Image (cartoon, rainbow, N blue to C red; front, side, top):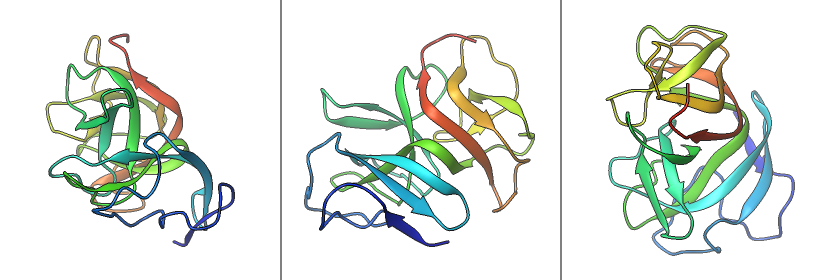
Length: 161
């Protein structure tokens, strides 16, 4: 896959790289393109410990924090584009098709639910844990082991579902 920005301004930090230097304002949004997944929208955020590519995170632009999503997490949701760990900065996807970490049973065309496994989703129905604005599009392990493709539309974990 080849990622590139299609909007924004010259000199954006590369989409799949992290930096120990904050290169942009937290919350900056830009549109990008992936040769396999298509067009997406991305947000620039501060990292959190143990983040890997495909982790689902909950973010708070006011507090300048991200947290790997688990059952009970609340707030806007994004998908890590890099292993953007604590004290680093990078891009997270908020709209378009994205590869997301998923548990073994996640199936295509299902609603995504938060799990006890940090950063991962599943299709097992758990009251009040649905991720609104995120739909599982492929079975787990497609196209990558431990991941599935999801369609994002500014997802949030708001305690519904």
